[in-house]
Image 1 (cartoon, rainbow, N blue to C red):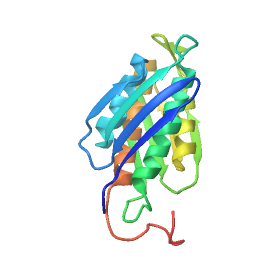
Image 2 (cartoon, one colour):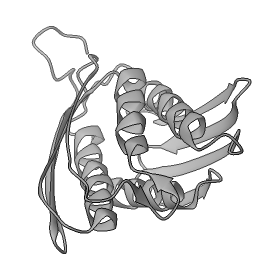
Image 3 (spheres, rainbow, N blue to C red):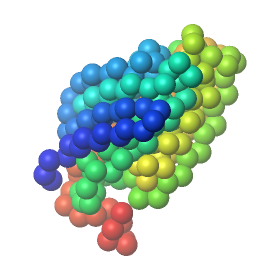
Length: 194
């Protein structure tokens, strides 16, 4: 199986990011993105995937959180690809149907080597605190594109925006944890490569 850890450093004129990922961790996290609500969501992703995650970001928050959230998605996707290596022995697929009080989030993902994001979630508010809800989809699209995997997010219902968002990230964590799990010795594809 080998060491399934990765470290990515990404620096642009808008953000300075460090991400460390351990696919065989225990769900420990050390997060400082400068965006409190986003740290809260990434904590759920780490905890429920059982992947250890460190994210440090210094971004142009004087503009808004967009660049930080989007670039963290890119760097985390790159980190996931690096940690997975040739994907030999992984389960590949993961799904979760997760209730979060009034909300139900349904997630399915495939670590296929091909990027695709389906996002069906409706919120009753435009912000959660000072966090722009549009950034959830931006993050997930960046994460899937750089991580080269399929992600389907379907929220069946929900009233409270915080609960909907939290359900999404917890369910993605559970699905990701199942997909990266080491279950055998071969590449899980008839193509022989992912």
